[in-house]
Image 1 (cartoon, rainbow, N blue to C red):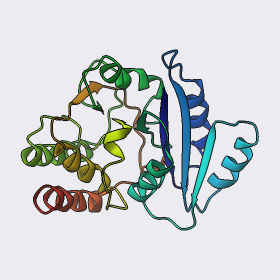
Image 2: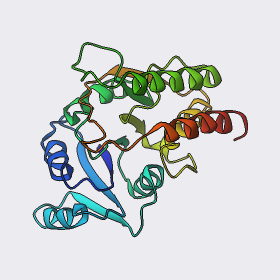
Image 3: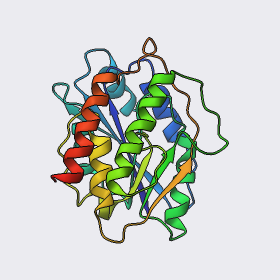
Image 4: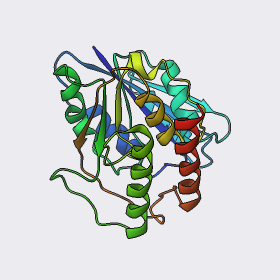
Length: 234
């Protein structure tokens, strides 16, 4: 079996090689191999150059290059089209989440319990960096609103770590090009009949805006619209 790891990257020259090193070093169950797909989303720094140099020394990384910045959702959609694995997981190009925890997300799927697993930053006993109150409040508010429409009891709808059986993620037509991807995919996944969605607690090593964090309050308002749009009108 194969786990396809999708890594959208926009201006991540400071972390892209570090995250690839971490992903490459992850030890998965013996019967699972990795397919690593990096989607360079029109970076204007040295991200693409670093990637091109890096792949000269490895044969398990595919680079997809968006000529202009299209957004996280568009990059993930591009990556899904090229994913050939049995399972798909999303990995941001920063260092906020730990690839060693893929095994936590895989376990409910391999045990035959889950079709989709979300890695929650708000449950469990893993380390969590203490960050901005209003950012945390916004995440929890968006999750609450999403749950009202989907009738799920997720604790972290906005999490980066979402793992899917490929048969489910590939049947979804993703429309959102930017951070609206998160509420859109949650709404559409929740509508699949008899789908089994699980959560596991993950670590979170958050970064500040100075360190490169990109999401902001405008994305929060967009997410509210996406929650309404894809639950009621799509």
